[in-house]
Amino acid sequence: MPEMSLIKQPPKLSKYPFLSLGATGLVYKIDEEIVLKIPRETGRDAFLREIEMFDLFEKFSPCPMIVQSFLRVPEANFLAFLSGGTLDQRFRANQVRVGHSYCGRVEKVVKQEPIELVERWSMELSCATAWLENLGYVHGDIRPPNLLLDRDDRLKLIDFDCAAKIGSPSDGSAPPWARILGVEAGEDAGSFGLYGARTEQFAIGSVIYLMTRGYEPYENEDPGLDIVDLFRRMEFPPLGNDPLDRIIDRCWKGQFDFLKDLAEEARTLGGDTYRHPTFLLPPAAQHRLQIQEKCQTLVNQGLLEWEV
Image (tube, rainbow, N blue to C red; front, side, top):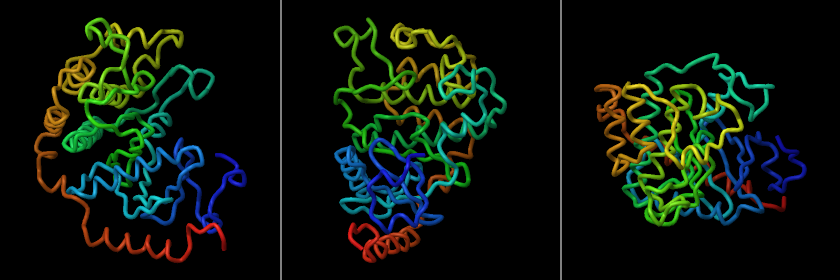
């Protein structure tokens, strides 16, 4: 955790627990329902892009698999507190790594998550990206640190500063969350291509692989492997023939034309459970309004003011 005395923050924020420091912002826990995200000096443009995305989201029926934003002002975003931590933290806690280092090869997985939970997480992630697709956007940075769990282990997609319009050039990401295109892409070979169902489902396939194995693709192999080149040549880790592995295979090979098709496939994993309409009900509007009013009161009381 960074030394907070070295980070600029409104004085009244110092009474609240500091949760995390990301590339674009600092996050504080306000109470058991709310966190506050404020921009870093070096991340203001990205912070404002995320604000714009949440402004767009509010024009549509909410997606339960996307973190709620209760109130946004130019220098702050009040979001739902999700107590379960990130998917990255969840799986790292179950791993033993060489030298106990953060990036060391995974030697052992001491605990596997229940298959029913993995199936639900796969559905929740797929449905979140399909909802974004319906708006004409991709998330653009799907990876375990950007997937949070609530107290009931429901998965929520967070961090929308990399969101981009479908069809725009992809900025890519580190493996295994993105793939440099190979010779099969013709003149696009050597690039990440364009944002769309192909880029998002590749990342989703790698996330599901992590959830089913307990480690990322090739994370249990020799760290000297050129994973970028392996993926470019479409040489992926071996898979089985169970429903989740079939989805991973199709995701890595870009066989879902649309993310909505992937979401429909994922929703078959849990039988009737994920098809029942109550499972996807949006949060209660009245309760959301009450939280929004609480956030506005904090702003009115000077929480974000630099002079006290």
